Every structure is written in structure tokens, then in C-alpha cells.
Image (cartoon, rainbow, N blue to C red; front, side, top):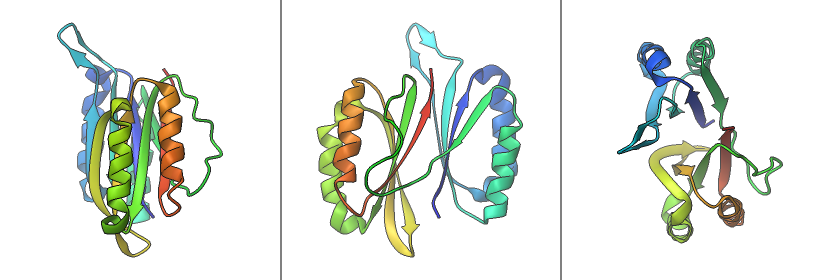
Length: 174
């Protein structure tokens, strides 16, 4: 099983320390973490997002999730991976995070990379990590999407056309 959690922190000043404490206490199951927030010359957003890639015993991963759920002002979602067409609507007026599980990365990787390059104008943040999927080496790609939402759906459809690819999505409403 591949475990990916998405976290929305509504006030980084108040909640970030509590999140960091929970992640430190459960560091043994945190394989990779990515944090981001809006930042430019005029703005440093108090709202932040994290993507946590979990690796470890299921009970330990669940203990981390339970501790995070107990933090007020935090929204936690689990990324569920599926093949084929998605049952969930792609409509999301907030932050969208897409997970792409690429089995046989040596064979499928170039095709996936070409698609991601084609849709590069809607990919704000990208993280790639090594993973084991059904006992075989694989690649896990995490994407934060931004911009033209019709392109999000087109990207996801194009990825789902590759039969072996599994896709997960987390949407945090605005």
C-alpha cells in the first residue's frame, strides 16, 4: 500500500509548530515530506500545505494521522490511488494535489515525463520519489496543480489512458 497524506494548515503561525512536533514524534513513518505556501514580494500566506509520503507499519501511520487530526485548524486527507476512470469529479475551486504511481518506471517513465512536460503550465510544484508498488520498483510523482482547471482534467485523463498508471487526487476547497 502507498500512503500519502495531504495537509492544509489554515494558520501556519499557530499550527505549524504542532504539525512539526507530530511529524518529529512519528519520524519513523515519514519517508518524504513536501511543504509549500504562497509567497511573493507582497505576500507570505499564513495558509500552508504539506504532502507526507508514509512508509512503515500501518498502525504507526494511523497513529500519526490520528495525532494530526487532533490539531485544530488542520485539514487532513488521504490520497487514494486508482486505475482507469475516476469516480470523483475533477472540479475543485481550491488547491489540487495529484499523485501519479508509475510502475515499471524504466518503461513507462518516458511516456509520463512527456505528458508532464506537455502540461507543464499547470504544474506549480513537482516531487518525485522512489516507491515499491506491488513488490516492484516504481516512481511516485506528486504534483500541485495551478492555473487553467480544464487542463487539470485533461492531464488526468491523459495519465489515466496509460493503463498501468494509478492516480490519486486530493482537493482542498478554497
